[in-house]
Length: 393
Image 1 (tube, helix red, strand yellow):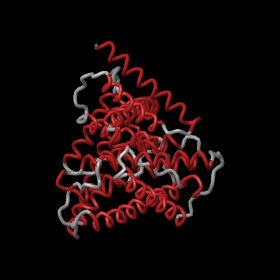
Image 2 (tube, helix red, strand yellow):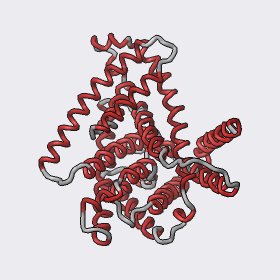
Image 3 (spheres, helix red, strand yellow):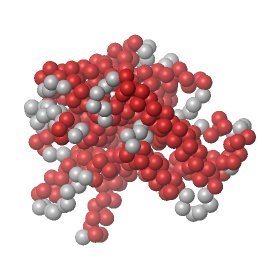
Image 4 (cartoon, helix red, strand yellow):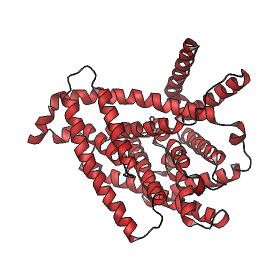
């Protein structure tokens, strides 16, 4: 039984790897194929009457670890300098403005038909507002470097601001001036913790001579994030700062204080660390979407009650995105379609407490919204082509 399980899991992950490679050629996002594969496995398990333990508790754990690694992977690839300031500012606004617009449009609709609490309506709306970096970043490999960079920044900012926005609404009973002051204080704390933790972890990375180097770094990083989350602090900021620091070591090479990190050794270790991060991120992301596909019920996937609402939400998402790209003077033709929902949408939905959930915002609506948004991205990128030239951003 154990050998059969090992063969089965290895075969699934090798298929996931093939999906990842082929996505650049077929323009079919690997997440669609992973969800389908997971669903097919579930049908096979049911048909063969195999007894599988409840895997639902595993999904949030995989999702949280995947979120940390995905943000880290994106941050490690980002170059920070004065020339990038304009792109970073636009990416941040492109992540924040559509998120707020979509959230309040959907929340207002839910408030009118589902609940008498606008806070509850907004809490249920936020999961639909976050771009999935787990899907967006791998899907734009064939676009020009400038566009890829913008998508990496935007989707990373979307992940972070989306989680911050959700926690801000979920953890505060009343929204007032005192609430904003408390939130600002939390940001200051996590920024201070982030810089201290980054220096410690970077020092360790440059000085550890043991043959096991990267595992303790990754474990400590996840531990710091988890402790931050336990105290309701925005731990993703720490992950972003850590990734940006390691990805931009050359900016500090002329500083005297930087010599304590053993720069020559640290740069070599960071190169290896990036490779390890990419490998582990692929595994966790593949397992997450395979498991989510496995846990999908056919009735949820094909629900005709939620499908019209999913179509309306996806329409709102892309109309708001078109408006935002236009006002920020960004290329609409290809970037319009890069707004998939995915891992963060699922995690935030699972984080809504039962007494705050709305009947309309159910698993069927989440699944259908994710799939429709990914299909729009897939067909949009196919139709607009994948020209390599850079456009002014």
